[in-house]
Amino acid sequence: MAEPDSGGTISQRIVDTMPWLDGLADKIQPVVQRAVVRGGRPAKNILDGLWMGAPLHPVLTDVPVGSWTATLVFDGVDLVSGARFARDTADGTLALGIAGGVAAATAGVSDWRYLSGGSRRMGMAHGLLNVAGLALNTASLAYRIAGRRRAGQLLFLTGYSLNGMGAHLGGELSYWYGLRVNRNVFESPGPEEFVPVMAEDELPDGGTHRVEVGDVGVLLARTSDGGVTAIAARCNHFSGPLERGEREGDTVVCPWHQSRFDLYSGEPLEGPAVFPQARYETRVRDGNVEIRAVAGNAQEKVR
Ligand code: FES
Image (cartoon, rainbow, N blue to C red; front, top):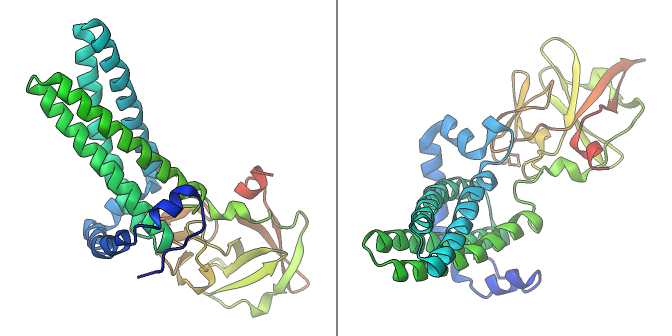
């Protein structure tokens, strides 16, 4: 078990006082990993968000956040006015939020299966708070259906508060740990003009070769049509080294979590990566491979 780190944000320092989260994660994470593998590649790609080109979990979390905020408002209107429409709307949005919460939790657990160390611990705390909130909100709906509205509203208020805390920890996972962000963004865009990076005859057929161009790692590949392509060498999912990945046809598979990228376009063909790799234009001059940045890479757009 990793020794808790006492640095970091206030939330991290609180979470780090709970090393039992690591023990729980040790038990749950292998079960999640096996379940996702058993679901097969299509299920995995759906949960990762590959089909829509963005991580799925943050999109789904908008459903319970929005729906339950509406529940809060309409519960307030009900308390003040006793209006029937307020009660019905509160119950409807509560039910919608529960359905969205279950879907968000499924995608979130799938994202969590890759984590380790402090980010896994933070993800465990995030998940437990949200599951507790979801359970209380589900109980709230049951109480309302049974006619115990005031007790149901109190349960909901408690659940909503827990979900708020959980959502904050989810933000920490992205903003502090960089979970599901495009890691290519943190590199420089690469050279604006063509620069030679290696002798063409040293580039193996059917293989890949990594070169450093300034602070950018670039993966060169000889493709099946005899051409040379270049994409970012660091996987945009968690910065895995693509030069150590398996080459399969004109694709490369990341050695860390098996995202597959098209070597021509940099597009992800299999998750968990959902963003395209940065791409570079190539040409051969005087026996040397030359590259330059192309327009449209993420790191160029953020500068
Ligand atoms: S680092 Fe996770 S798939 Fe590449």
